[in-house]
Amino acid sequence: MKGTVQLVGAGPGDPGLLTIKAKDCLEQADVVVYDHLANSRLLEYCRADAERIFVGKEAGRHTLPQETIGACLVEHAQAGKRVVRLKGGDPFVFGRGGEEIESLRSAGIPFEIVPGVTAALAAAAYTGIPLSQRGHSSAITFLTGHEDPSKQNLTVDFAAHAGTGATLCIYMGMGQLPRIAQELLNGGLSPETPAAVVQWATLPRQHSLVSTLGTLVESVESAGLGAPSIIIVGEVVKLREQQSWFEAGPLFGKRVVVTRAREQSASLAGQLAALGAEVMELPFIEVKKVLDPTLISEVLADIAQFEWLVFTSSNGVNAFFELLMKAYGDIRCLGPARIAVVGKATEKALNRYHIKADLVPGTHTGDALGAAMIATDSMESTRVLVITGNRNRPDLVQKLEHEGGAIVDTLPLYQTDSCAWQETAEGQQLLQEGADAILFTSSSTVDSFVQGLQQQDWSSTALIPKYGSIGPLTRDTLEANQLPIDFEASKISVKSLVKACCKALAN
Ligand code: SAH
Image (tube, rainbow, N blue to C red; front, side):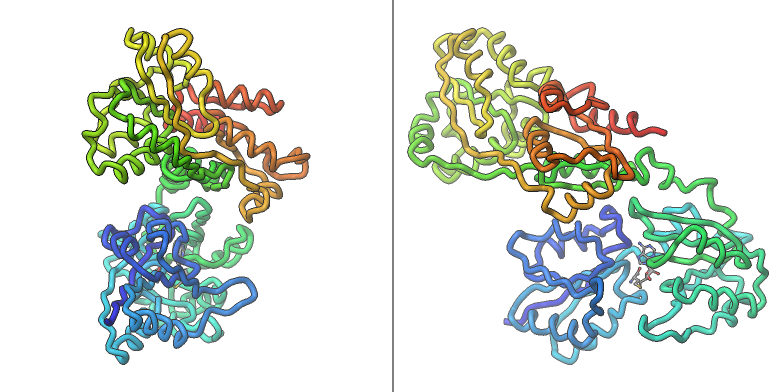
């Protein structure tokens, strides 16, 4: 069986600029071949068992030769795999997509091409420069400073483009900037022609400047801009807003640390990134399944006897329904049980199984959950199943038993362990460079943070992080560890934590 290759544009960096079709391709791929300009966060769309092959340039190493990449695509496709070749921006704009297709054509491999947002369009959009505008420019030209990065010669006659009146968008031009600027001046463009440079467009580290052709080299040097950048030359650059809408985001350029874990943290990271933050995800905690087969079969055999099921986390919901579906394959096995959840995220996880929660407390804590359940006046001699992790809620169980008179069973299904976050590359970066804020979303994230922090006091780092807490329990744990609480969410929710973070980091 022959596989296929999809040449997919990854867009310029902001993961939100990926097309829906590109996302579909990634979700279905058996093999993904990517390089350094494609945002590696996009790989999170791939199946866990998809093979990921990096073919980009790493420090001290050259990019793999084009033939090797072509051969790699052919080899995997011939093995019957669905291969995605993920390329920064658009595959056909200075991306050597054409050459990769040649290899596929000669091997008779079927292929598809999915366009992406190319860097010039992204740089213009994220700095607010309209590339065309009536009365200013009615043509747009994409040029490359050097087609082959190892060659130092310009392959484009820049002087010839100077007289066209088009907006010029120059890729890969930073290494040759003085020559490019000089050629454009030689071609007749005035030194007063507005010019912009946008580095790392669409990413939190985006850095842009506006200058004139005559002073561009100097401005770039003093601002310290380098590759990868797009250079935009033309009258339209004058139309740029005072400050780019993107760079004006409340968290733009701020480094915010969150714990790396699925689901809630993905939404937290997404919300922060949308406000311009550079989100650093650290593995503060790790959630592992812990399954006690005897206990599970006892509980499941008896499942219809419970009048209340209580979930204290979305991890618990997912682990429980996975087991339940394996055992019964039919949701009706739950009988008429009522369901209580500790908060919104857990409720959302439950809703994914097409089940509504009967009770969500106004305050998302175990204590409030217990009180709300007791207030239903249905606890006396009632069988309740609390589905938890290892940091289960003895306070909740006790409350239901002692104050409510319920008969409570607990079913621990997972374990939350601390991770050695300080040993990861991001962890090292945090310890050396600091951050603007660290957001703690549970007591266990604080515990793990403290374990890895050891004697670090931040005094030698450029940025001393502010500590943010999602709610009272997390705050208590910060306090117990003598850490400051610089800000706290007004409600226990991701949205509220993001809001508090924006306020705390506002200049
Ligand atoms: N196929 C890509 C271009 C690859 S060539 C596309 O369509 O965008 C690599 C060059 O693209 C870089 O040298 C730089 O000039 C530009 N580039 C890519 N991503 C960029 C980004 N996020 N910000 C600014 N320039 C970028």
